[in-house]
Image (cartoon, rainbow, N blue to C red; front, side):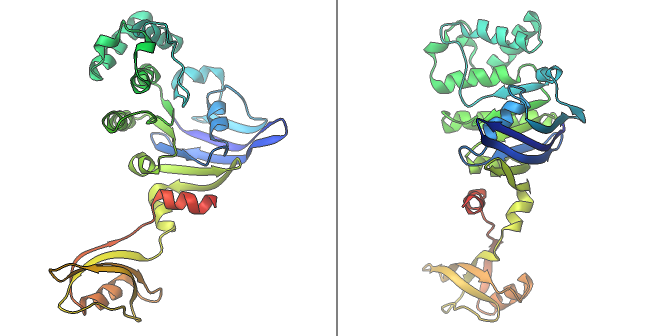
Length: 300
């Protein structure tokens, strides 16, 4: 599902939650929706789910203006979970799947397949209140994806999960993406963004302040910083013609691990040639900024 958002605005009691926001989300991508608290992410998600509508501007799915008929094509896992604590898990999951258009028979069949996959068959007749927060989240993830939506929206999906179950969810998100599902991932976990997302948008005060592919953005913000290990019989010093040394550490085997900054007026190959005059290069790679570093820089 391709999503086009064009010049949307939304105000609440005079506060502008979304301010002339435009962006495109390509079909079949995992898209990171990023921003600080209060940036407008939840408002945008609510508009995509048609819980609220923009005051102006347009949102379209696959070239058609968003409408109520689109809701069955969307799976939404909110940050605040919404399962009924006193209701049996299987009964509740079937009910929620039916709300998304599945028959009771199809819902039971698909849900039991997912329960087997997640090794939680024994939970079917338990009540939600008997489960931990993380286990409840597993159930809600299944309910979100069981009707095989074209668009999945996850708001902080890894919150409350231990590393093993977080990895389980990541693998399922990747597998669903391989099958062609478009996914929007709203999270403050920048490591997950780097691991999962193809493209991102960073919004602040309701505005699009940065967007593009994760690869392109990281290269856009690079600062000619490199990490290298050089084996040498003597101390390695900066070379004004090629590079400056930010940090270095030498071990007992004569290997010096360095973080260096390339001079702007030389190429990487020229810099490498300059380093080779000082010793044997055993490791060399460019140090790109993390999405966490980019996030902090742009928001500040």
